[in-house]
Length: 355
Image (cartoon, rainbow, N blue to C red; front, side, top):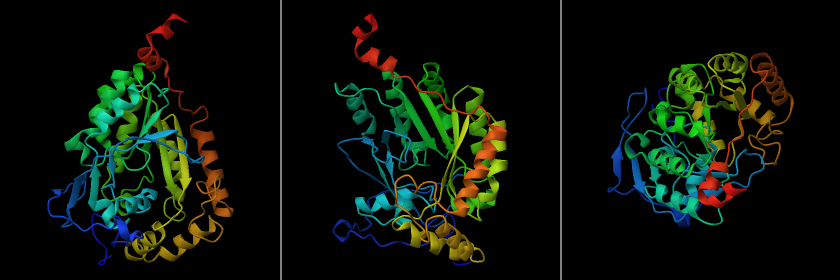
């Protein structure tokens, strides 16, 4: 434990495989250091504005339940050690380890790009999910409010939107969410991987506390805003024993459904996760790594479509059966609503209202 870097998920810088895209740290970054419920460390988070030409991305993976995603930020200060999005940071010229959570790229022009997308003649009103890659409510959102301004654009256009987050900051925008919900335009996915604060601090060091996330589920549900809880990922021998109690608790708070994934350590996540495990939970590291491999045919990652998200083998089947039992017991009629694009389409083309 004495070797670990407090307040961070990754415990080392991981080399970027794409040498030609490598960046060196610059002194003119805007520097902030924020931690929700955690003491700040000496490793300041740096923010750099980027200027993308597009903002809405088509998701082609058949394993992901979304057609389009939008990410106001690249990199994520939450520092979840298992995060699959770490690999994408290499394409921006940074490493997937500490760089991913210390160097955050911000898209201040996102609301403008979103407006252009929704007003284009070719756009048909497909659901856009914030965020499919990194958390749209990570700490810097409190200051920059890019996600909030994007939601205001969605509301003006009466466009369906999904949100994935593990930060209680989403409640800042409750009034916008309520307005969207009145037109059946919003579905919220809250990520809760554990009910243990100790586990949360290890796995997701700069995220909202478990207590705050449970409050988000309760508050949104009280306003009839549909909430799906994502137990993602389930890690054998770390949080796999919590499936039944977690589903029971979120169901009692009003969640309409629960989804899960089995952890897979794709790309550079493997060495990052192993280094983290050996430094933070050395007594359990071998067991956890071996059981993750058992879920993926002897490797810590399986990239096969249709199998990579849920895993295979005895342990994965046990997880699947336990989750099915939990849903049958606590969410027998669970399910999220189908969002409506009719308001957007009619606003975009008033003549549709004649039919």
